[in-house]
Amino acid sequence: MMNKSTSSVRNGSEPQTKSFDEAIGQKKGWRQMLPFIGPAFIAAVAYIDPGNYATNIQAGSQYGYLLLWVVVISNLMAIVIQTLSAKIGIATEHNLPEIIRNQWPKGVSVFYWIQGEIMIMATDLAEFIGAALGFHLVFGMPMIPAAILTAICALLILTFQVRGYRSLEMVIAMMVFIVVLAFSFEIFFSLPQFKPFVHGFVPQFQGTESVLLAAGILGATVMPHAIYMHSGLTCRRVIGRNASEKKKIFRFELVDILIAMIIAGVINAIMLAVAGSTFFGKEVIDDLSVAFHGFSTYLAPAAGILFGIGLLSAGLSSSSVGTLAGDIMMQGFIHKRIPVFIRRICSMLPPLILIISGANATKALVMSQVVLSFGIALAIIPLIIFTSKKTIMGPLVNRKGTTLTAWGIAMIVICLNVFLLYQTFFV
Image (tube, rainbow, N blue to C red; front, top):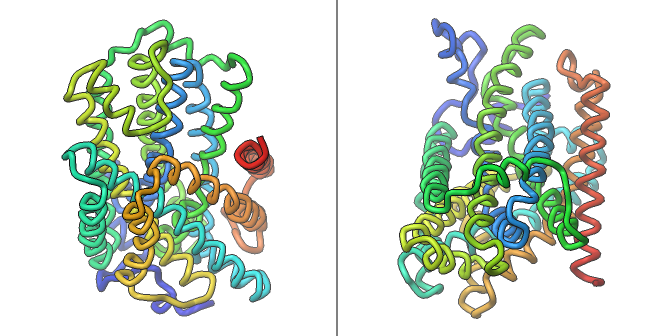
């Protein structure tokens, strides 16, 4: 067993680890859940990032409410995968990268770290560009000053991580709340039609293009860094001394997951519905800048501003989460760590260079999602293998039905991403 004080994934001085009794204290009823609320909200940010904006807006503008059911299915898949990630942390008191390092040869762990850093760079590229685009659209700033302001804000948010995860969780939760508010008001501007909206939850397609777009939504469901990170956020947050306590911790964490992921799913559904009611039958939107101006034109200037604010908040929050995930992965895979500010500055350089060079922001977002596709199988497969082993998981080992469901989801996600890669490079 590794030394928990040195292997902890925190960066601040705030103590993170508590026993079950310390966490619960004298709390009664629903208050007992409060110490366990937070990790899933940080992980859920990966599901409302600028990449999701792009796919949801295009799906809604091209097919109306037709693919709403795909958003629901993708959200259910995400709940299963994130539940396994949280559970392995609770059961083992180690994050998934640490378990890979302990269970598999050193060379495998080093390979995982290298590909993990590439995934983080791709993640940060999408999130950083999304946030810069938000500043550009909302405040009318040129992209280069917007990128510099994004960098400053990202470093400011990082100071909360240095103070401890609780502070970061509060900031991330506030940013998610801003996205919720933005799209809640947005739906009042667009006023989706009730019957077509409800009909969108019935599985159906309209031609090959709708299947391809559905594959894009489902294929972008699981983000590799969210899997590694969630296990890191739960592994030493509250320590269960026995099987009973670990099961209780997992039940509380499951509530956290359900709340956070349902919110993320609702946001994605609203994005698609708003795009469908605004653009369907008028124009197909495959560029976030065009979407911003379209909302302003077809609905009201305030609708465009709300869209930009949501994009800005999602970009900044998800970018901060990427930095946290990178720290957890490096510590876990190779037992090393660099100061988070240095990590953040290094991860911001590629998107800054892209923006300064004048590259197309939306195309860069798409390419970052292509890169992320390569890391999905590498994250999901060991997660399912380890959570299915009683020698590792103890009382929280997967049931057979859970394992079969997880493998089914893994095969769907992996096949869809391979299909999307084929479409990107060979069609």
